[in-house]
Structure formats: C-alpha cells, structure tokens
Image 1: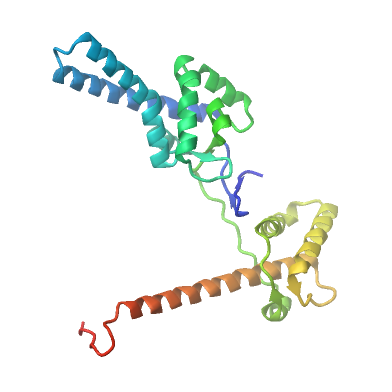
Image 2: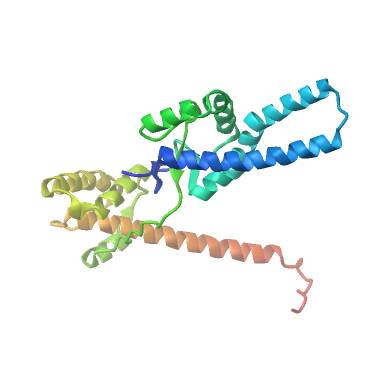
Length: 271
C-alpha cells in the first residue's frame, strides 16, 4: 500500500521519494543558497570595506550558523517542508504520521545535517537515503520525517454506490459511527475486491462484515451479500455525514446573519 495512514484513519496518497529526486532537490537548494550567499558577501564587503579581522571572523561564524541551522529550520518550518528545490522536484518533507513539519522536526533535521550534509558533503545522507526503504536520511530518522511525492495525477476512486435492494433498510437503520480504521479497511476492500483471490475475498469480506455488524441495528435482511452490506453502510454513512454538514452550514449562515442585524427595533438599512 502506497500512502500515509494518519492518526485520524485517513489514507494519504503519497509515496516515498527516491534518493535521486532528493539529491536533485538538494542541489537546486544549494544553487539558490550559493547565489544568495554570494550576493550577501558582496553587500557586506561594500558596507564594511575597512572592517577589522575580528569583525570578519564574527560575521563568518554568524554566516555559517545561518546557512547550516537558521535558514534550513526557518524555511522547512514556514513552508511545511517545501523549499524551492523540493517545490521544483515535486516533493515535500512530512512527519511519519503524514502531518506537516513543526519547528522541532525542522531543527533536528538541520542540526543533524551539519554532519551528514555539510561536513561529509552529503555522503552520509546519500548512502542512508539509498539504503533506507523509505529513502530517509539520518536527520529524517531522528526527527521522524521523510520525503513524499506530491506531484502527479491523483488517483480517481469511484464513490461507493448504494445497492438498490438495501436502500430502504439503510435509510431506516441505526448506524453508529464506525471507527476510522475500520471504515478505511472497508473502503479499501471494496475498491480492490475484484483483484483479490476468491477465497481471500470471501474471508476478508466476512470478517469485515462481522466487525461492521456490531455498529448496525437492525441487521440487513437474511441472505444479504457481505459486499452489498458493506457498500450500503458506507454509502449511507457518507450521505448522512453530508446532510449533517449541509445543515450545520445552513445553521451557521442563519446565525451569522442574525448577529449582523441591528438591535431590535432599529430597522436594517436598505441596500
């Protein structure tokens, strides 16, 4: 399965990035950084042409710290793991649970990068990225992050349709909220059921049906096919959630319009 399973049970369609793509992104970032440092050095030299040697040493230390720690941490945090090089190559750095980078993860990656990127000219990072199954470098392993592809055509998945023979039962049934993990498993099973081995298809469908039945009352008519039952539950669950969201939106809009009205007794201005 290619993707990231978040803590909310949502599957993100994202695949680990290859070492070659990460290397290309790093080279692009390095090129942009080199141009920026060159311009900065020219500006500093023009502003302080008669500066002392000690001042130049201090500026050098500040410049090195900025390049190796401050800039990578700031850019990764503000862009949520999408520097210019990563943006150009269509990748993003995310947490292992699929969430966006936080300051802590960005700082850990930058600190580890001093050794694996700068002091070893990226050798350690490249070897680790090639060997690791998810293409992680050492900084990613310690920070709990990795690079994923975010470019390319999205997979279009057909919505789960309501079996006509179960529509009446589903509309009147009491459906409790399914755990996100179970709902995800059912959705994945229905989407690839036709590609499964017949024996595995029957076994997995029966197991999922037994789990979902715990959240349904009354049960469907006798003789209902497990896949039809699962499809009916998911379709009805989706329709009910959509209806609830529409009602919530209408209620919020009505309350908002009331809040913007003038106090009682004061006529609203004519538009």
